[in-house]
Amino acid sequence: MTTVEDAHALVEAPPKRSILDRPRRTTGVWSWFTTVDHKKIAILYAATALFFFLVGGIEALLVRVQLAQPDGTVLSAARYNEFFTMHGTTMVFLMGMPLASAFGNYFLPLMIGARDVAFPRLNMFGYWVFLFGGIFIYSGFVFGGAPDGGWFGYAPLSSTPMSQGFLPGRGADFWAVGLIMLGIGSVATAVNFIVTALNMRAPGMTMMKMPVFVWMMLVVAFLTLFAMPPLTAALI
Image 1: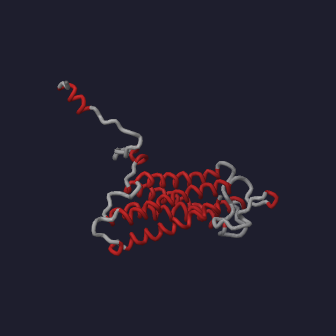
Image 2: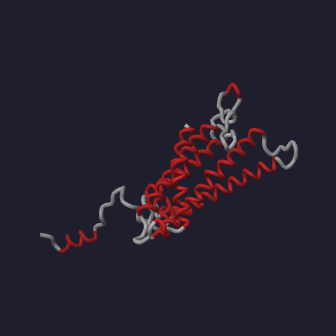
Image 3: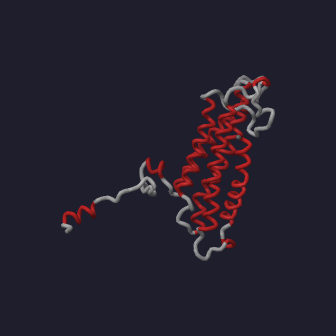
């Protein structure tokens, strides 16, 4: 027979939580590391993209200072190629694409009347893969040199046979693996946007009633979904 004390104990005992439960912390620094809220993830995307935008701008500034006069000595030939490669890669993959993801994450669910994106955990996974992919690319500066084959990755600049003198060191390896990680994050975000726009619209909102911004993000998500796997195969 249950006593009053047992009843109070049952009421006061916190429910057991599983590691698969949705994170509930909404305040504090740790909440930003564990959040699956689309608005916070959008802010993380935007802040990280702006940080890499600053880094890419510094790289462009150094490249331009080197070219400001003949026989410049600000950068060595190898360092110039590294900064040129990293500037282009940063502006496309670490600033432009994640900034678009930031706007999509923040506004797309709100515009279609959804509480969140379709897969909140996959959404956060995409951000963390993007962040660590960017860090992995830049770690080449510390571990054997950054890539210096041009941000477009065309041969022969992207070739690696040491007998020809192209791309000495492991910079190209860090660049390729980092871009593969960024591609995985982009595909995860694209899948989230597609499923959210197609399946989570508010009642009464047909496809032709969706805002133009939602249509734009949906089309870009499909383009990303079809473009990234071939790029990944080429990088491998």
